[in-house]
Length: 166
Image 1 (tube, rainbow, N blue to C red):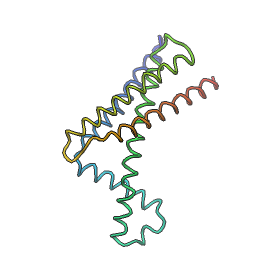
Image 2: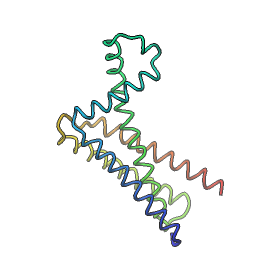
Image 3: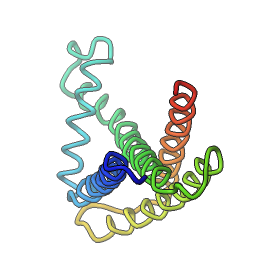
Image 4: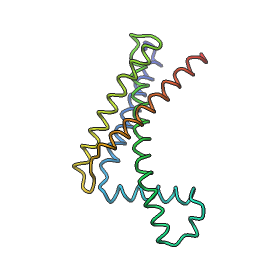
């Protein structure tokens, strides 16, 4: 992009991708207790909002319900943060790759963003091996990768819709 606005857009999308990566790194730096507390907070919020009759449960029943929801919340967080990473990297790469036009540029950007996101997911799990109370899990790499792919595909869809509106 030769215009000032175009260069600014590339810089901002790059900053957005780096910010998402940094947020993922920061979340992975929480020790086991901090991570558990964060998940517990969101799991409790989810239960209060969506579980019918949650307020009427005993403290033990509430704790059991939150514990069941917590696994889902943790995995949904993995999926979501990597969907954001995949989409952000895709948008940045697609805007910087002006050598190709149209569909080829879009798919080429996707083929760069996806492996990048998968490698970042793997490195994130390795990072967690060195954090007290945390463990790296191959299944989390798969969930992260699925999230990245979903984010990339949503961004591709958005690009197509935006292109048709021009």
